[in-house]
Length: 188
Image (cartoon, rainbow, N blue to C red; front, side, top):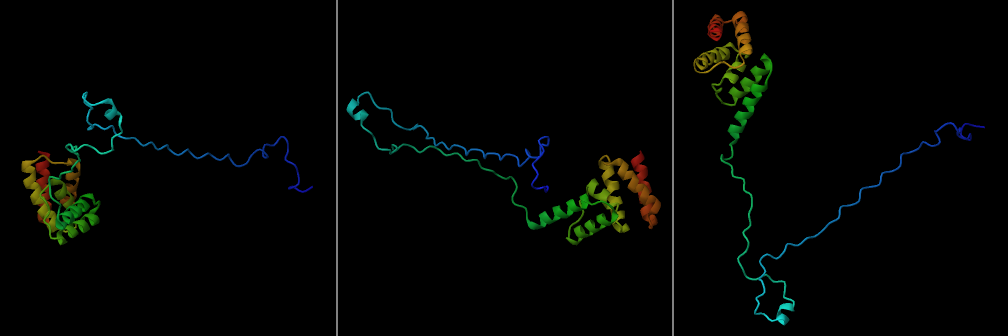
């Protein structure tokens, strides 16, 4: 006897195995049409005769004031932004999201190439401390020095770390001295 002609063993449950039973598809939802009650229909007067009251009336609404339709309106307080502002925001978010000196340098150069000036905000200037051009770093240090006179520093550990790196490894002595001065201001 070949393997194919053998009967399945009674102890084996292979013969009982097969495809799982098919699931029945869910019944379709029942569609129910509803009509609104006629809220504007006139109430029959007591003076009407029963014969006229029982007569069917045509399905024409009486000439009354039309109900007021309400619709939700979205009113924007600001007008649509122009393309230059959208581009500036995109490039600025790209700069703020960049990680590492090379990515910060590329994003900052793209922002400058777009014809925009960097905003005088701590997060932006803090990112510019990672720029590979020391001229950008020096201008960021100047702006940060004026900002720290008005505001408390944000991201203090990151701020100190970048200043220490600039103080130790900057090529320009002016950049080193500005980073050291700003680091002393942070400690006080």
